[in-house]
Amino acid sequence: MTSEPDMSALREEIDAVERRAMPMELGGRAIALAILVFVLLVGYLLPWMGSAAGWQVLLATGDATGKAGAVPRLFAATSLAFGIGASALALTLRRWTLTWIAALGGWFAAVDGLLAIWTRQSTAGMTSPGPGIGLAISEAAVIILAALWLRTAWSRRDP
Image 1 (tube, rainbow, N blue to C red):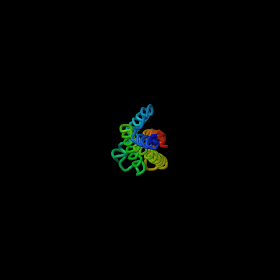
Image 2 (cartoon, rainbow, N blue to C red):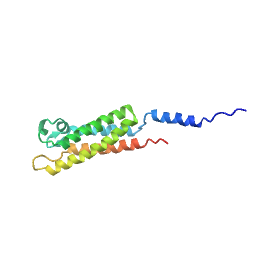
Image 3 (cartoon, rainbow, N blue to C red):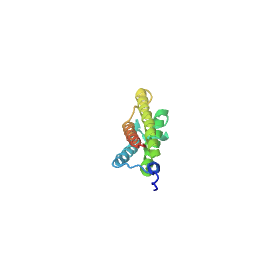
Image 4 (cartoon, one colour):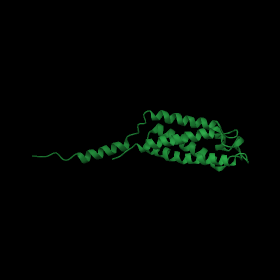
């Protein structure tokens, strides 16, 4: 009388490999993330400091020349890299690694944004204009994006 070998260990290993290789499913959250990326893009077109738009702060051109400090430029760069770039890649490729990059990088950009607003408020009226509506919209979009990406990344559970 022969007994069948125990296949439970093999089945668990196959399931673990399948979970690692499986792309993420965003469902309705993908639309919310895409809308927030669009809002962040709109924020780059609106004034961040005086009449200087976000893209001008990023490139240090126009009215932002000489007025934008390092912190607003850092926020412009990190929100572009993580809020737009990493989010677009994660939405397109649907890989868990990109989800974590968008989440953690988004929180880094969110802290940069708070510092950018604070530096604009603390120097407003002295030598440079205060924070504009575009900076506030961009910061709000980055915070919500980071929260949604973190929630998405954290939802993957491996037993």
